[in-house]
Image (cartoon, rainbow, N blue to C red):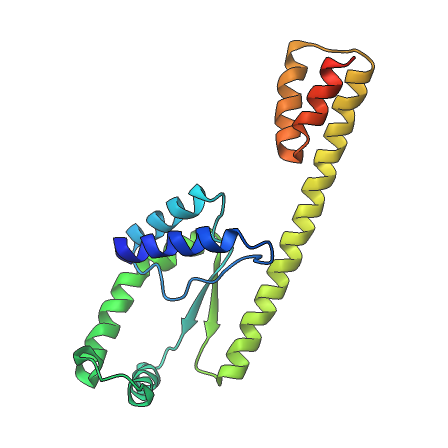
Length: 195
């Protein structure tokens, strides 16, 4: 992904984060290099986001893959590009597999890579993706509930100590840390200064 594409991605993320209905997004076909992975991570970190999963659509039979790419070209209403010809497509695929290897290894080691057998019909492939996404959504929601509960327990502990006037210098740091996680800094500071 080149610099212009990353800038467009940043603008799209920024635009969509303003919409409360947006719960996430899918980035298709990128990153294709390890530098792209790190650049994407930087962009997402700037927004407080991270990659939750990566799908690798696997087609072991290169003839099937080449045939599908050729069909895409033939169905396209746009003028055929020079690099969409069969012999050039084969070279592009070979380059792609070399280039994507480090990206695949990175996401595998991160535990984020899900391989999908894409030789099946698109409905079967879609179902496989949907099942993984449903499972991930359930895990993410369960983790949010666990973190919220842990934060609530810690917040209650700090509140109890404040009410009992057991204040020390470490507690002020705890208040800031816990309240930043819970979004209750102002309430805690009011409690602290109104004892």
